[in-house]
Length: 462
Image (cartoon, rainbow, N blue to C red; front, top):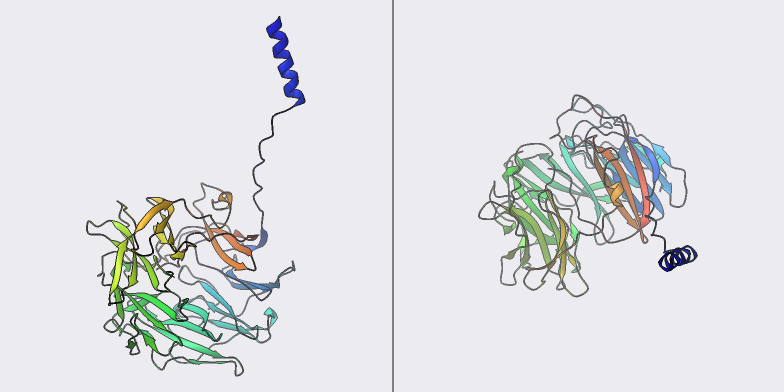
């Protein structure tokens, strides 16, 4: 009887003083529905958040190039679908085919006029510009920049030089046979001209360069890293290379020695002389800087037994590049062939930590994701850390229907302490070949979140 009374007393005390409730799970943000978009294959959209305005370029459910814009803080979007012209690929220039290369890019010039380019894979130039600052209703097609070498364009890139001028880079030619050209915009005249009389990187009709976007380093120079490719087969990437410049006119190697233009296979500075078939892949390399303001390049290639490994390289004062493996993987990403392929290894740019160490994010299909802590003096990996925070909650990084075969696509922009993320779903890459059928259009949603550390960087396909 005494034991029963004690149990009863304990139960009453629990009722009077209940246990703390478990923390409710964090709510998954719903985001803002922008439109319904093409889901038959992945192709990167563009998200630009700058100077109090926001712009999105995407392909709608009918594969039409669409641009939406608004002032930050407003809920209504202005939406335009600029006109196209017939192209060589049996489609209009403002409609997407089955090609994952045909990504979109956006930029604002000093005056606030919007520039749009994309939907090109060995196509005539596709370019639009607004007549009035921040006013999408004035967006119009412009069929030429310089009018020279603009019929076989691929890989458009807008960026600014140190003076704030708007520049545009693209490839003239095709995979295995191309040259990289640079234009600069004259805002008062609203015209473009060549930065150089020659291409910057020239494959001489026998190869082409796959380059990272030019990156402004802490030393005030722009740094350029690229690899060459001999044919459309992605296994023929080779010879990781480097150059730097303050003005995009005078170029030099890491020792400050001038480089003649155009830069070719024979004249560029070689980081790693890897040959075709030795694992260089233009989807998986990146650039950062150490505490001494020296460039540090991370990239994928095969080790001597033929396994995939990540490497870090940095120029030596005496010449050449010091190369150190970061990984100890036992798998091989055996890629080859034409068309866009899925990346089985991605590497983020080396980032300088507060203590002078370098942090490198990675993601692999075979060995998972994580972060390396790298000794800045030796480039050796000293610690394995958990993966960087994702750009969205885990629930939004998985397709809504796991059995659908769709994958989540994202684009991120940062502005004044906020992180904006576009999210939509598509079928995987299919080496740019048409499918018999496409899934229903997907929701394109925009999420606004507090800015946090960036996750592993990804790259447009090969």
